[in-house]
Length: 458
Image 1 (cartoon, rainbow, N blue to C red):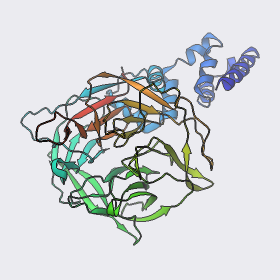
Image 2: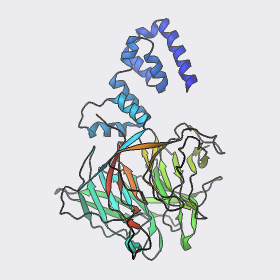
Image 3: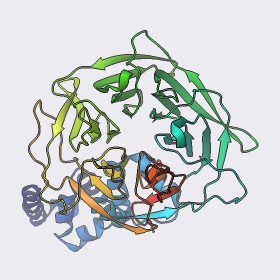
Image 4: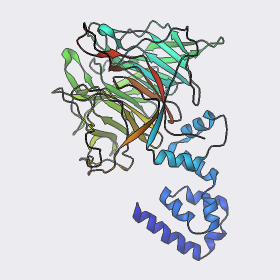
């Protein structure tokens, strides 16, 4: 990075001294700047007053944000502040140098209304400007089959109003996965009260009625005879807007799995075909881990519980290599991680955020100690995978400070981001409770909903 910055400075200085670039019109300069990395843009700004003014332009930095974060995130950010002026340069700096987050506890505007009950291992998704909560496990090892929807829209809200939706299907379960593809939900697998693992796939879509009520329609996906073995506590994510990846989980007889499957969906999402992705090397068998897509087909796997019941802290990247999806392990240095902080965890959440990174929250370690820490996992410097583990990456992990509301330590909660990637919602999970004489442990389920904000927009 330092070398490219020095080269950019030398090139720009020589161009500036030879004059033609100084006479170039603003549109052409904008086109050039949008092709440069950020350190080169900063170097360019140091050459003269005109260029300093140009590189401080809000329209330039909005274009840079659009380039690096994608149009969906930028448009959602603009809508979230009702078209007020956004300081794009400051926002870009906040996100790229992210060192803290702010938590806000959300409440229901109607104290008399019925709210979702406490649960863990449920699903929580942001789709069509709504939060959708389904299923999960609760006290006594029972599954839940209820569905809740809350309209969010864009931007910060202090209150959230839940609506209970009666759909009848899918059947109750916990430890399932549910991902967003376009304006649809794709749900797979899970475990019911009797410990039976599922391998059914459902497509869900929200329906908005004239009276402001929201309903959710589900249909069973028609797929070819081949399907992944039944499982729960697996991980899943969407890639390419037409494919879903699932990995690992707990299969029949409680055996942990290490297989990877890809679901290819038809354009209308009416049909699908599963195929197993067999590569070497690949992640070891595990459950309670996370998968998150950080752009295109780049999928990051982290943590989980292994075959020997150990809690893991390895990181894997799934990406196209020679035309095929392949796994490669990403090795990282532990020397910059604070003493006494344990990264291995299971039952955490991993949410893609602005800048092609992941926000890791909570989970529990090998001793079942639950956590309430926030980490940024950044592998953006890995441009393409190789067939062998990458070299050790420094500064891949960064622990964030927490401002505002302090959430309880929790595991097996669920988190999702809005369309901007700037706001995240967290619901439920297992938390530490007060020990009662009749209880074997201090474990309890939580029904809390809170918002995580990456930075201040205005």
